[in-house]
Image (cartoon, rainbow, N blue to C red; front, side):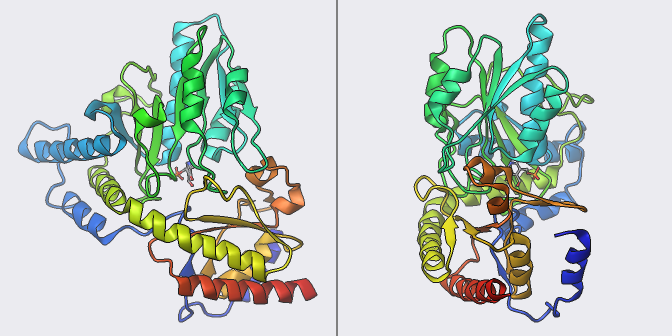
Amino acid sequence: MNLRDCIYYVERRPSVITMKKIYLDYASSTAVDPAVMKAMEPYFSEKFGNPGAMHSFGQEAQAAIDESRQKIADFFGCSFDEIIFTGPATESNNIAIRGVVKHARQNVRSRTPHIITSAIEHKSVLATCHDLEGDGVEVTYLPVTKDGFVRPEDVGAAIKENTVLVSIMHVSNEIGTIQPIEEISKIIRKQKSSMPVFHTDAVQAPNYIDCNVENLGVDLLTFSGQKIYGPKGVGGLYIKKGVEVAPFITGGGQERGIRAGTENVPYIVGLAKAIEIASSMRNKEAARLGKLRDYFIDEVLAKIPNTELNGSCENRIPNNANFLFRGIPANNLLIALDQAGIAASSGSACSIKTVSPSWVIMALGKNGEEAKQSIRFTLGKGSTKKDIDYTVSALAKIVSRVSTI
Ligand code: PLP
């Protein structure tokens, strides 16, 4: 669909103000939890001090950061000084990848650093790797199985003497597959000649699965606020003691000198509160949404012809369903769904001129057309069986209408 078509659809939409609205795009963003808002509020106004200042206002802000850092460290099973705060997860991923490469370059000047990552990573990892390739870094993009998993043995086979970093995501944001991080870690730890740093982008994980860094066996782990009912634009990075990450944002030395700049105190407080809530709700929500999601998958596959589930049913995060609607352009379907009040998404990046197919769906062995016919639905706190029934019935109507045109 080109831009003119996009505008055509937007202009012809009925008024959406009074329409029933169903949000099924929780992997994209979540509403800030009221308890998170409440925890953040004082730090915008009466507790506004700069945490770097010596006076009581500054001390109060610093204490809030310390308390937040401890809560987050407890959640990830690490120590207080192994957590740094950043902006969005994109920044954490950049700090992890560029920081490890920069450190390697500063210390072993004769070698070309080599990174191993996967073909299904988020753009913030892939674009960073592409950019580094332009700067002389060697990158291996591992394929995945047709079910959407990196094979641990592929990681082992790709490690070379100059491999400085392995970056494999914990959970796919598009197809929800949970990657075998523990197994990959074991393979990396067995290396004799070179021991690369192991980074995982765990942005989609904390609401539903264990993120203990010891259990995962990772050296670096990216997390973020906006996917866990916390604020946007704040995240963090776990950096295992002894792992060197050279800073590329320099300034006043905050966050161990790795991410300089005055800390965003209210957002950090909100991030910690969101993690605390995620931890207390995790088992219950994972069980509830897992059942609801399985029901959704069964209903779609049974009631809508020519549909397929993208990615495995096993080892999949409980809130994700991604379908191929064979023969139906995802963008037409998304717009029709939006007109019915339902928000979902496709992996395609809708740029001004073109809609590019999702590289994640293509990595499963699907072709470009199939990738452009795939849609992601992600459930969350507000999702109910009624919403799913409404969505399935809307999908059935839209698909039969579009198929007969
Ligand atoms: N990594 C994953 C797996 C994501 O799903 C996202 C956002 O969708 C990001 C990184 C980037 O997050 P942000 O846009 O907040 O920087």
